[in-house]
Amino acid sequence: MQHVLRLVIKFIACLVALGIILGMFYAFSFGDVLAITAVLGLVSYILGDLILLRATNNVMATAADFALAFLVVWFMGRALTVEDDLFSASLISALAVAGFEYFYHKFLVVKDQKQTTRSQIQPRPQFQTEASEELTPVREDVRSQEDGNK
Image (cartoon, rainbow, N blue to C red; front, side):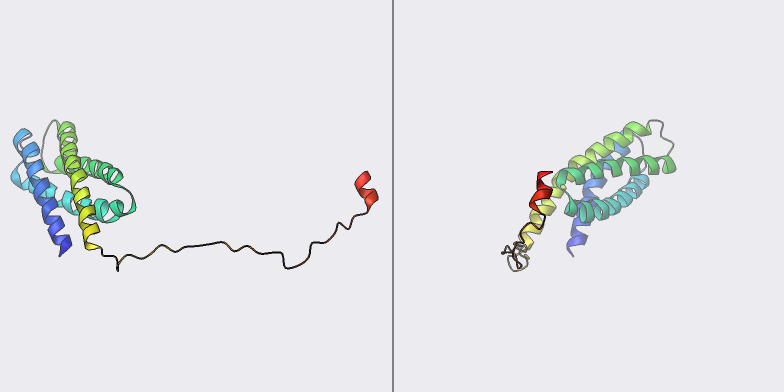
């Protein structure tokens, strides 16, 4: 259930941001904006939030979401519309999505920390080294004294 709520929040925020930028300033149709938002929301949630955010930090996940948003808007824009200035549309859209994603990732981390209780946290293993005396006595040097003088 938590994934559905998170996807809905991401979808609505991306739809508003992309609707304003692409719909109002670059004359994308609502259907095109809706398709771009659906693909971007699903792919960025799986790759950016579930995989990358858990493995790295917020800045890395936001940078990956910026690149992903730029590529999705660029390629889907080329396929869906005949916009002349697709580079700036993709860049501005990616900046807006990355700005939202930065705070969205903070929201996800806080939510995950509140849901995790002390009983669910696995303690880190405490590894220690063992030191002991040698099991066999140290042998004296078996070389002759004459070999050492050469």
